[in-house]
Amino acid sequence: MSNLRVAKIIALIFQVILAIPILGGTIVVSTGYSALGLGFVIHAVVLVLALKNNGAKLGAIFGMVTSVIAWIPFVGWAFHTITAVIYALEVLTRKE
Image 1 (cartoon, rainbow, N blue to C red):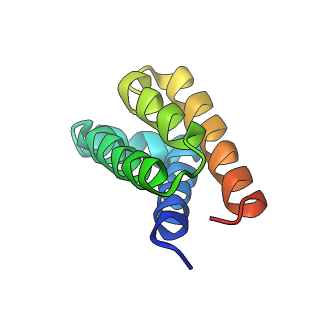
Image 2: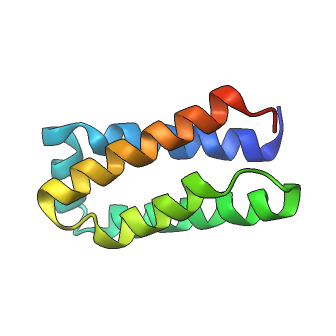
Image 3: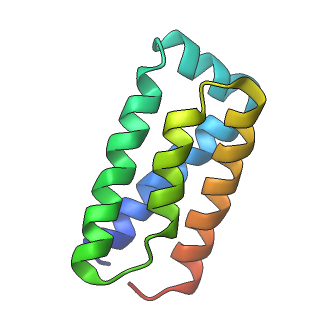
């Protein structure tokens, strides 16, 4: 399994956890929104690995956008969910 695939799985798990309505919101608020900063870093690492390995970049780019706007309650939930779906599709359908 490649480093890119492992990084995408980690990002996927992170997004799924934050997409759970009460749990994700509690994590984000209780960390003083630093969980969103951590998410940005995770997605940036995935993007660098994707660029290096000529892999799919959509999940990483969408994840970085999500990390920036996810402080808006319902918008954050929707974007975390969409990002998780994109990562899931990338992990399940691509051979990276």
